Image (cartoon, rainbow, N blue to C red; front, side, top):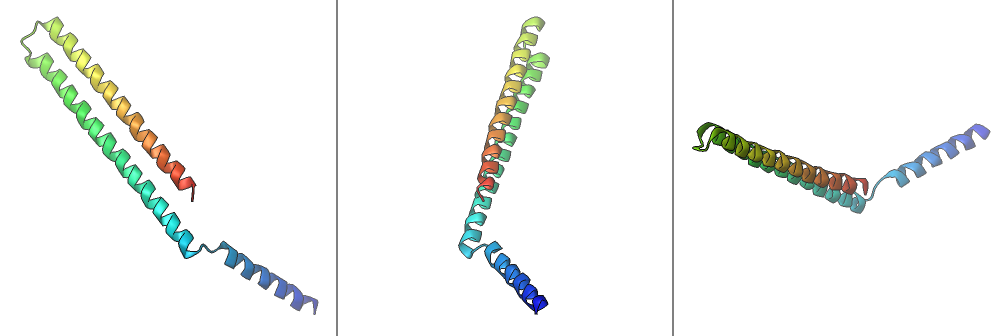
Length: 113
């Protein structure tokens, strides 16, 4: 008799756990929406990063052009090229920070699930 009641108790506990651990359809839809929004934010971060890289690459190309083809005296051209490269590096760093901030927000959003 004791074995039967223990088995019944374990079975009832297992069923109760299964029912309480299942998400409702509304909860699943909410989580899917959050996940989609976070994915979109990460895609946006990737786009920001790519655009920043492209912009910095163009600035570096311009710096190379200044060094190679500018009609300025060599020290002046080198100085201008250095400033252009510094601006490219600063833009790249700022864009990376912006993309990281967007990804951090996406991570925070995912934690709400």
